[in-house]
Length: 261
Length: 340
Image (cartoon, rainbow over all chains, first blue to last red; front, side):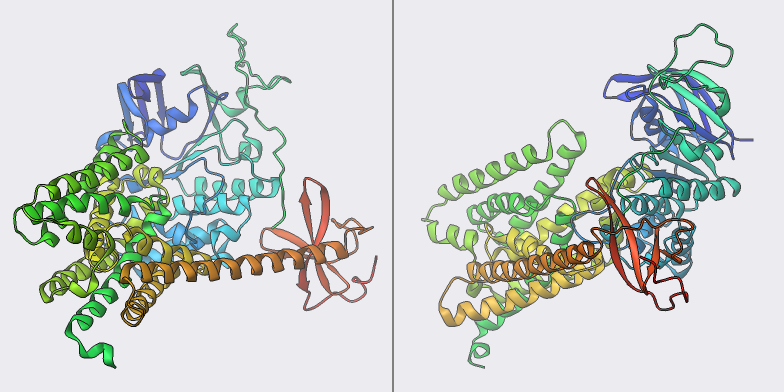
């Protein structure tokens, strides 16, 4: 079986400066993986390397069976960036923003057809916003806008979904809604890679944890095995003497924010 | 109509119609991309093209088109390399373009001051039949490209990083957009002039974004606004004896001011209404929640509570929680709505 993600001695960074060094990681299709680590640990750079947004400076990085720079059908990858709002300078509806996600599957000139519009509607329904399809995204709450970004990624019906801090700054209700969405996505066989510093309600969906510490993988195993200290750090289950990695949390209470409209 | 009896005004109105339609059609993408001044920069480069045309006795429209498109490609390549920020690259383009144009024009055998002014500020009544034909081709090409690639151009303008991550050809689309802007600059050169081109690209889009609910609506509305101000500005300039470019741009800005004021008043009214509704329950003695005795009513991403037949929505802010009115509840549960 072709691995969804395969890194061999991979170094990833920006310009000539590596942020992630000598990483080995294999993720099989259908796995749900949390990439944990403190701010500046390199976890986001690792994900951006898989998306071609950060440079592969050494080793091998393969996504869906092809070196990351040579993957032709990039629409097979869904991406939810770390972005708190969707709205740009010009208004756009939920339908329009999510429709962008479908374009990656269509080539350069093909316009959205009825089947594509149906896929867009399905993606919006999956995040529970069907009744807001025609509304400007700027009129949605922050949590709803984050769900629009998830729907945009789902519209391409991706085999691999990469999310960067999907729960940061999102109220508890929206985090729960997101966890339910991801449970459905995972059940459909999509590989999940979620970069986060707090798993929150996603802990019920993600089964494997990869902890990035100073650009290297410090722990790779079951999510439940990455224990949490009261100070927010973690140690390995065998307590092998390595220093704790601070700055992320598992199964911790969620951030709450303005839940109004 | 008297104005239509003159061939030069027929051509002028045709040119203004095409410019009014096309300029906002590309401008709306520039506004979304926060590169509103790209048209200005390419206008300056086009001046160098005009000067080359004057020096070599070839049609300035053609040489301006070549120069502006080349400038568009160069600026996108510079931006893509990431070694120079977009605004610095634009500044170099600005000053290099206009300096090159002025110096080259000064080398022309006859004094070119009048010509320079007509390109900088527009001289719509000098539009020739061959100019109209070239403009028509540019109009069809630009509108066709926007129709064909509009969704991708929106995707790249809205979130370039996402577009790159999912494999859209970002650099190619950016170059296409810049080339469309360059073509529009040349199309607009005679009507509003190189120094005022950006206004006709940006101001109608700025008005449309205040009124529209969707990107598609904004695009159509911007084109309609551009068309109306361009044709009516040209007409007004004929009767008032004022320059067409300045008249069109002032008309567009006047419309922008009117819509901005109306929009601000509308928002202020909505805020006051919201505040009044919130004040109704500012001292709300009852905290809604599970089992509080009021019927919960799911509403979008939250739950309202039926209170005397109207819906209360908890709104948490830094100053605490108050209850917003979210309208009447069509079917209040008997005996549940009257508690304080």
